[in-house]
Length: 236
Image 1 (cartoon, one colour):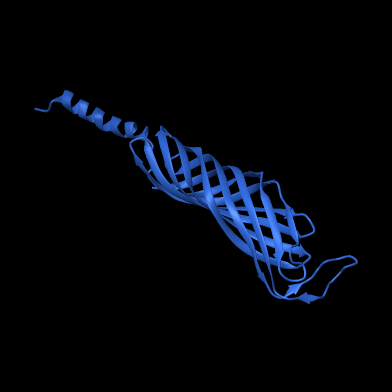
Image 2: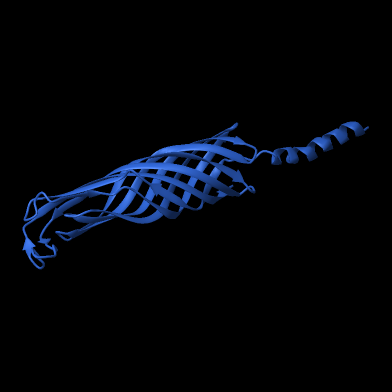
């Protein structure tokens, strides 16, 4: 004979199981999404020196800081163990901000793009994930020297990045986030220039004159604080 009380209890457990599981959000999976934010940079320095040729020893120094909007994308993966979430993430952001040094050597540095690759460690509670991250940063820049010589080139520089943020799962697949990152890099710019095309104006103008090979050495210190917001789509 069927025990009706046992059957009802079993049915109740079966029905309550999915509801209980729905209260737990699993952060394990891969994800990708878009972000936008605002970058602020201060205390930067840029110095340049011409070595050799007609303008040997000419220098220029300057650059303090800037602020600019950013936009980009990110992708990564998480693995959850109890309340701890381990992960890795990479991102790409467009910046497009210029800064320069003063005469007698006039040069303009434009920070074009920035990338990071970071390890992440988070603490999950409900649909929230509080996390910290750290890793390496890469800055892509272009440099144009206008006077007294004409020279331009692109360069990549590497440094470190650290930060943290908060994520919230709207649904099983859609996640929103707010994040802060601090980036720091040392840039080594410039290079061998041959031939040199002089562009100095004024009474000592040498426009059109070509001088022997020379070397333009430049170095920069770049620090940036970045606040950004974004969303991800997670699988599964």
